[in-house]
Length: 194
Ligand code: GRF
Image (cartoon, rainbow, N blue to C red; front, side, top):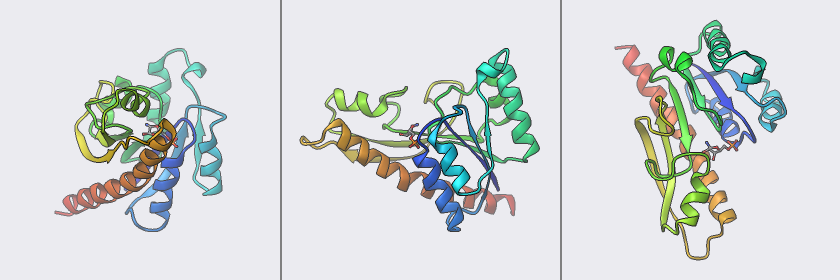
């Protein structure tokens, strides 16, 4: 099973998944990191792990469709089976979605359908809810609306600050994302051998 990881920033989720793959905990190979921000720290992380990096942005193209057509070309050339969005801060458009339907997986830092969008952690914190969490889901044409694969809850304590909550969410993400991918890929491989 060949994975492409997409990320736009720090890349801590990328790192957690890559380490799980390298440790043999996920039965897959990371074909590439795609990053739409040429200065993002995740690029350094991939280079350190000797994972091939591809980076370009929609601004390099005349349209989003052309940007995604280039991405699609890359994914097909590398024979990628699954696309993992690990902090990829763009909406996936129809060019990619049509070909990779049910094969693009995202992580979101809230209990969807609550608090979709860019600021899942901050929005939950400022609404004073007592519980939030992390969601792993398939990507569809909405914003954080696709079918949910797994969720894990986390308590917001009265003494939590936004920073402490962010830390707890990220720690949960780094545990949940690799373990959910490991299970999902194992199931898919078993089914393909039936
Ligand atoms: C994570 O909180 C993820 O849920 C969200 O973007 C953040 C990416 O963090 N989609 P990192 O780049 O993996 O450190």
